[in-house]
Image 1 (cartoon, rainbow, N blue to C red):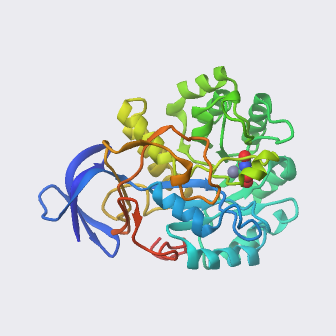
Image 2 (image 1 turned 180 degrees about the vertical axis):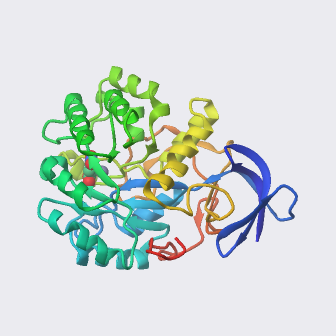
Length: 389
Ligand code: DOR
Ligand code: ZN
């Protein structure tokens, strides 16, 4: 199959044709003959921080509903977080969850293994067992206050795999506690830092060999803009302005998609859904000139693939999967919670302008067109060890 159109290729939008075989791009040339695709064709997004719940919290979200929401947002691959109920802190629960994902996920799915004080002594052995079958993108502590620096240090000495940390103490949550936590972690070694909310912490990470991730809500909203809680909390306007000024230093944009029901939110459950709206909001900002298209693709496709080791994702090039999100710049519209697909049913981005993808392709197959999903749950693949992934 050959698709022709305006592709994001080698750092710019160029007209070319992409030849696809078995889901992989095998040839990119100007002068092939193929099916014309209208719109701006970007690599489909990779969201490395989602909470798809499921298990005993299926009323908030399931792998099925979360991955459908992701697909509508132009995302082809997610990294799910281990703070589920029950949490992903042992081999059996990891395998159980991957079985659900195999049957239900619309898009490609991977899962971090949780790190705790109780499993750190076994973490290398657990990884060995799981990685006979699946590729674990990262080991993640569930919360720093529950894990502690000694455990992180021990984990670092036992495994070479990427470790993600939430650099915060949810009991404190202020700007200083984030900076302090980053400083302390950097003394131990390299990490991937989830949802960084301050420019000072971002700068510390930028000057190290660790990597950083920032959410749209910490860039777009300040403290009093949203009546709901999130961890880390939304900051003062001046902190947010500093973060925006340092936007170019961010390695990864990730949603921290954290669905809760409205009732749970009123009771204080922290977190916002966002996997469906990240690419659409930022593509709209590209159109308006607030964000460079290269920065967006780098932070939501290229860097996530590189940092988390998804070799065949993140770029439109020979040897990569034909995973595309196609945007028509004219199709801007306000975000409406009732039109989104997360079980949460609400969004902090209500009425913000966005451009949702008109088409999405996964491994060359058109999976979404004009608001209609063309595949069933289970179409997506789980990331396996030593397979073509
Ligand atoms: O606000 C948050 N909610 N931050 C996190 O890091 C976790 C998340 C959740 O699981 O609800
Ligand atoms: Zn999270």
